[in-house]
Length: 364
Image (cartoon, rainbow, N blue to C red):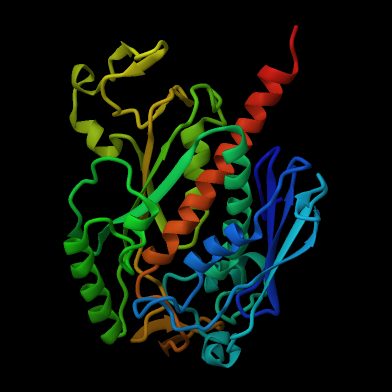
């Protein structure tokens, strides 16, 4: 189904931006997992609107509620259903958009596909849908912590034309969250924040790039053909609103190298095993993790809804002008960091479970 993701650890999100609730159903979570609700709430708090003066001012607490699958703080093995109530919806701000299409938004394509659309904040195409992904990703991270030492860290590396210096090492959560824009380099972060404030004041928006690093991934996760690990990571993050590009390891820059320059030489690892001298592969070779740090980047376009008059057409195909209203992020990146981490966690736990089922349970 188009609203579900994952094969063994399957999540299905539901709800609309200005409907009464949004949420997620998680199927395939093993029983007897002690689930920390505070950790799930902490991730939702990192995603919620209104957390700084460079995000949408929509005032939502985003308090998570468990409806099923949890008994006395432990998972039962049955579907986990999580819900968040929309308490600050203002659908009246979208009245004009009922008859006019927002440029570069999903208004036109939704109407063409379904013959009906929810114009209130974009309905399912709103980033509010990602609440379910973040909640499910927080569950996945707790399960990953039981079976591995995988750590996932995303951070902003570019806003508009402001590019932060390359990050060395593995950033801490405190380093990422030290600034409102979630860029590790504080001088660059200050410039990014100022740029976002400038475009917001002009009723405009900007995009940028988020990098994600994952360490502690064991070698062997992924498949060699259709379900390659990097392909599933790409599908996961490109299913997010406003995403426009994905690259892993050397990415597009690798096209300017020769094979002799690009190849990652194998070396004996201290204490046994194999590692690579460089990591231009980004931790994945032949669709399967090689044990090195997974490094990928995601490009986000400028927020489509801007507070400036724009030429458009109405639902009858006549030329029109739209002056959008409502509360929107002038840059989606600060809040998208946690969503990228959540999608990475969902991919990794699903592949870990598939690997375990194929190679560890059945022994011949």
